[in-house]
Amino acid sequence: MITRRGLRAEDRPLIAALLESVPAFTDDERAVALELVDVALGQPSTDGHGYRFVLSFQGGDGAPRLLGYLCYGRTPMTQSTYDLYWIATSPDFARSGVARGLVATMESEIAREGGGLVRVETGSREGHGAAVRFYDAVQFTRVAVLADFYAPGDDLMIYTKRVAQARASAGEAPARGDAPARGEAPARGEAPARGEAPLPGEPALYDAAFGYRDYAAERNFLLACARRFGGRPVQRVLSWACGPARHLEAFAELGVGCAGADGSAAMIAFAERAACARGAGAGIRFSCAELDERPDVAPVDLSFVPLSAIHQLATPAALERHLRLAASLLLPGGVHVIEATHPADLTPSGVNRTEWTELRGEQSIDARFRIHIERSTPDRVVPVTLEVVCSARRNGGAPRELSSIRQEATWYVPDLAGWRRIAERVPELSLVATLGDFNVDVPFEHAAAWRLILVLKRL
Image 1 (tube, rainbow, N blue to C red):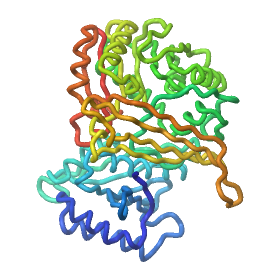
Image 2: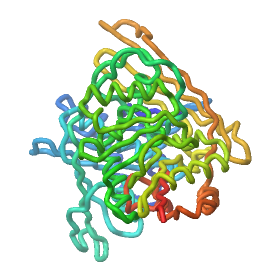
Image 3: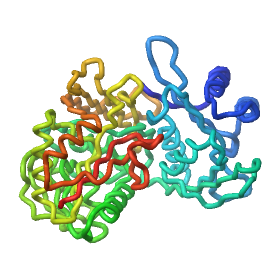
Image 4: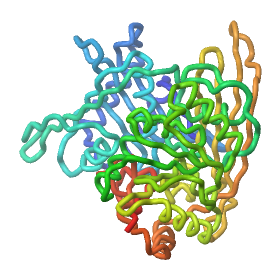
């Protein structure tokens, strides 16, 4: 289990030990990093303008282990600018989503405060190469380079990223948001907009639990995939395993024709009500179909499978059937994008347990997702579970459970070689890109890769 929290006095020796384990840091840099810790502990901020810390821990049988930490704060004499002063992760957990999770938590806090600009400075020397790649991967923009700033050949590089104001009061999101199969529990009531309390029923709880996803940004990424790797403009899209159809609503906002397929009739009914309630219903056509069944939709320019739902197909033959169906529904030059789980998550060093909370007024939606790697097979078949509990807490009293779901599924998680072998058996499609993030410039081999996103082009 991975948890994140603020700084405590007992954390100082843990941070010192972590800094010593990172070979990229010099002794001077370690001293400065610990100086910020001492200032934060000795002079706690009361106005929100001091140094703030986010620490990531992994629980276990003994004491929790510090995986990494981040230090940031408001930039003096600015209205809404923040500086990311320091981020460090244990070398034992490189490429496992720790740093990404820390940044996501920081951005969530900034969003709750009204949003703003985040600035980070780093050097260009070899020891900081991984940092440069990381900021590129998490979509910071390089805005300035001061040559030879630190030393000859060691430039100062300045990155910035704008964080939008939160549309809802949200809790901590997981480093990786993998979603297992959805069940058939009936939905009751209308679909809530973000920020409203979820109503009982599995589709509504599922929607609330994954409300932290930035659907507009992911839509833009999908469109970028079509531009970079495809051969036709996107006028119509299909979302397989569409769930509550939040991605499709984002496409509908741009006037793109949308179709959604999902194997759960209850989820389809929920998605239809949700889309209509938010004015997007007229632009989306739904079809009840599993990932290896042909939905009743017209050919499209772009199709995609979000949230690791592809792993519901538990054999290579089932994945091949899906790809053949996707090819049959794509127009020539169209692309099919699969958001898959990183293969490393089936190893002890991967992120195979996540917990997070979404806050909606007086209600708390607590979610836990686990890949049971101890029960995985040599063929990379593994059980997964998702638990979501909606509770209400009023006047400081004990929480009262309102509704909950527990989903169990069996996933098949190929490694990259396995994906390539399956794709080769579908000659109508060409695997044109393997990415490691929602960024077309981040390949799967990138040091900061935390997903496996496959882009296939219809020939």
